[in-house]
Image (cartoon, rainbow, N blue to C red):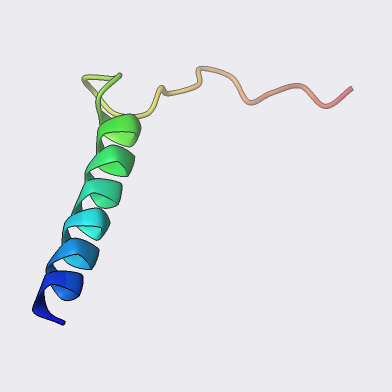
Length: 41
């Protein structure tokens, strides 16, 4: 039972790590700022 809990915890931490990496690894200053709002055509 303890092994199952440890495996589930490890899988959850891995999932959170992958999501964190993909969200914050690409840009140094966070999200890009837009100079102008997008035009609505």
